Length: 462
Image 1 (cartoon, rainbow, N blue to C red):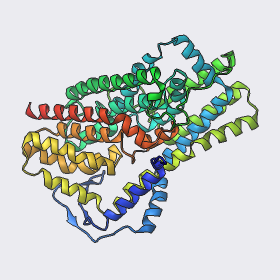
Image 2 (tube, helix red, strand yellow; image 1 turned 90 degrees about the horizontal axis):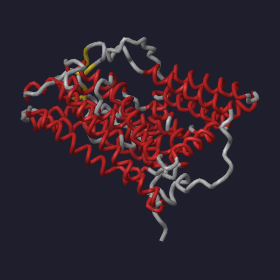
Image 3 (cartoon, rainbow, N blue to C red; image 1 turned 60 degrees about the vertical axis):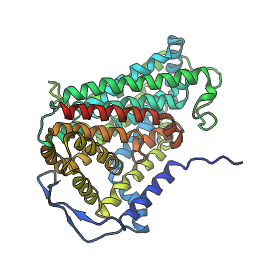
Image 4 (tube, one colour; image 1 turned 30 degrees about the vertical axis):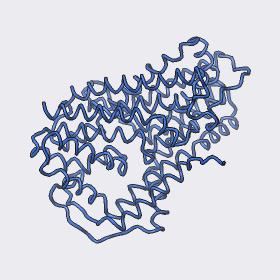
């Protein structure tokens, strides 16, 4: 009997586009009145408007419009691919990975907690999420060489940063924006979020390490054995020597990533007295382009070799760029069909008259589907917090708890939703089907869900 294989990421996203378009024919169109520089919706002003159902042509065009909206992210991905293509051409990555594995000599398992904590700090402090795309091609080979499967490398990056984003402490792009709309300071609710961060990090690290140990001891138990082309142990062979030129290449390579991390952290918004560069995708794309050229010249590549390596590396990530554009098409269709505000209004109606504990748990549950439809945390905060935060006063809870419920739901959904470009892009880089990722992570998602419910309920009571 022929085994049924999970559809590709492209097919999954296209089916979601079709479902959202169909919903615009069923869900009433509506809108809130807007106010302020952020064009935030005003609670109590929802009204129905003329329907604008989305047809087959809109479904097709939504992918293109989504790509236009996400072109900065897509170009960033291509520049990262070109940069990595040049670095791989030098052989420095292969030499460096082999050297790391030799030095660790069986202790590679400890890379998991160290790296996950680093990604978590990035996620909780400045919302490190899309930026992690640059690390998948770097770390997946490291864990493969150490005897693990590509799921381990993906989980280290995705669950490390995901746990940090889920428990965002001072993340200005989620917690900061939401706190502003809720009328509370960034420090309100910080103790709760710090406790959540510690607990979620511990759970995620334990979960990934347990799977990694099992796969290394019994490779046949890998969830992607025989499925991912990267799951088979690498064949033996000569590895490049770690020469002086390759050491210089690795130093420049690390320097580019350090500059990227420094450049995107909003030190001024989190109260750290360090100059803030405020770079985003255009500047970061330029950084990786320049980094690739500098590394190629420093290693001594000829002009033709450098150009070919960069173009080839960028071509390897074209599929990831397309996934990012298609995933943005979901929001395009919802906005085009004018059903986004209607979905939010239904949530507003469901919350009226609820007690403190039931209210905050309902808020959390409402944010779960909203986060699937609107994967941008800043966009979801701008859209929803002005509506939901005023209602919390009638339930006797503070606006900071609404912020915590919002960011927890958004962070949890972003780990598994096919509308999150980081999830689908990371899986594509590891050649891991979406269903295998769900099989791997669903138990941890339930753990995160239960822990969040507990934190929110206790906070509402206290």
